[in-house]
Length: 101
Image 1 (cartoon, one colour):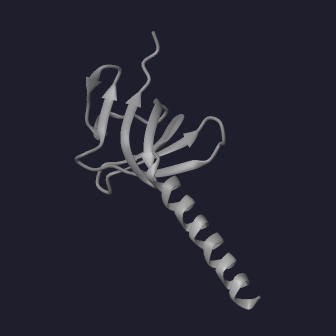
Image 2 (image 1 turned 180 degrees about the vertical axis):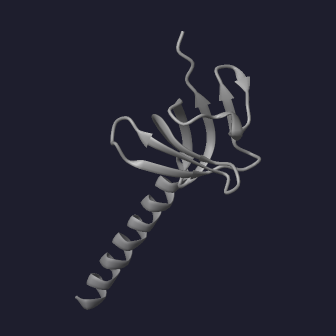
């Protein structure tokens, strides 16, 4: 009986570890407002519209940054800009400044 219990615990643990690993592989998208830009630290802080949470995101040379269809640099993003961010963990994969028409 103890062996069966240990086996069940092991299977459940592996299932949880696998689901956490899979969740971290899937990029998350948020829409929000820029509250801070730190070009020296290469970070962007965004307050999410839906949750109200603040996200401090790392930006690197692989991060795609656009304003509408035009590629821009991190230094061109302004506090109060509305943005859509695709991120994985705390790393920004893409940042799009939303241009109001």
